[in-house]
Amino acid sequence: MQSPYTKGETLTLKISRHGIKGSIPQMDDHMKELQVRITDVIQPSMMSIVLKVELEQPSTGIPAQKMILKVYDRQHSLELRKSLSTGPATKASEEQFATFLRGGLLPPFLAECEENGAWVSSVYAQWGVEGREALAYMKSTQSHEVELKVYEQLVDMQGVHVPTIFADVRLPPQHAAMEKDESLAHYTEIRAILMEHISGFPLSDLVTEVPESAWASVCDQAIEIIREIAEHDFINFDVKPRNTIVRPSEESLYHVFYLDFGECCVRDPSESDGIWQERKRQRNEEGAVGFVMMNYISRAKGKNGRKYKGTLPLPWEYKPSLRFQGESGGRREDGG
Image (cartoon, rainbow, N blue to C red):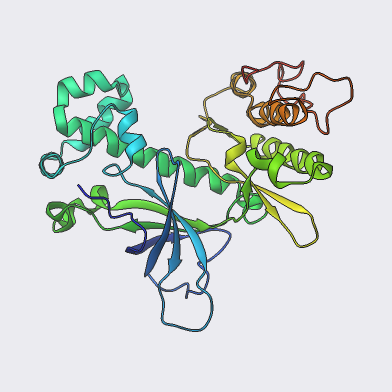
């Protein structure tokens, strides 16, 4: 099946609910639908399809606002399907999944996965093609719900150090058999999140994009943001310097944002403080940025791309916090 998510294409979005912190730029809050044009497809992406979009509207002379649309589409998310060891969706597989939905088989499938675990091999053996698509639906839906919950926890940081969420939206089904059957809409509409576009460069490009005199201030700001985020009740399994964006300003200052919360786990209310703290310690979210950036800087100051071996202090060194027991003491999780 051909992907509808290509540069130049126009998508119709139905607003499910507006964001808590901000509204869609250049748009009346009472509108229920909008059209956006895809200006770029951002790669790499993981469980969602990440698009740079602009609002389609009559010419007003005002430059169109750039936004990000994260689409949770089980059919066209290559990384999602790869993680489930399945090939691309086809017309035949979509028709089988539609029959599966009409038969009311998805709720018992989801209940079984919740009770026994969503083991790919057992799901495929028992449910076949329909189970494969149902599992992809479950994973994409969970990713969407978790990311929204994470941004709700980070509402005070939206627009400051993480993107502002403008709206939770839906796209129409991509397969004709499902598009015509409104009774299946709850399962076949494609979930997406419309959010603020943050311009800049990834923190991983620090040594080539920022004067050495500013390396320390930028890295300190990035670590403080990761620490503030880590205080919330979720764990981010994909914390990386490339997901941290540095925005230069006219005053030769730099504003740091963290962007990606697509692979998070929200704390279960039943988890004790001790268990949760141990999980946070093992994950070491701040170290996933701190140790890696220290390696980048060490290699930038060393010879021939090797780590610096001199006696002078580096322009910046990561100092782990004591917030979660065991995160201090120089424990390395970057393999370097």
